Length: 158
Image (spheres, rainbow, N blue to C red):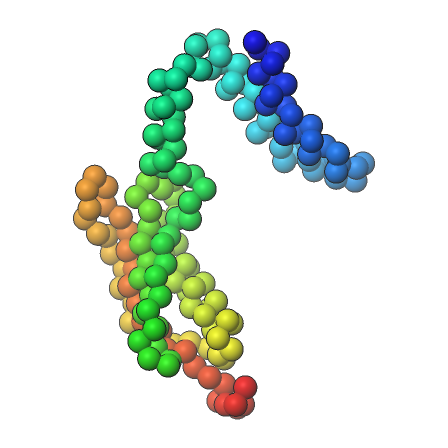
């Protein structure tokens, strides 16, 4: 059982090794050896403790669906108020492991993306509010703001 489990977990790493050459072998080992050792060690421990039962898988899937580590930390909703003005509503996901101080960075990054995608020269922040929304079972960080997209003053037709 243990050998089959090890092979199953090592298979994705082995398939990735086909693209490794002498130049990037050191980088591959540096970047992925700790993760691979952690996965194999956790699987061996879970197997030894009989955690590969359906009840544990169900609990792990429920925990994963609540936490979802691959979901973006912020939900961003943009509302077009008129030709120049956009309202941004940002809501942080409920369970996070950091990133509470990045609200303004996410707001500015979203505004810069709108400037680039819309062909504008810049933007002005008209309003910016940041706070906590009391929801059950956890509070969540929210940001609400409005920006004005600015066309180029030197070349208004561009």
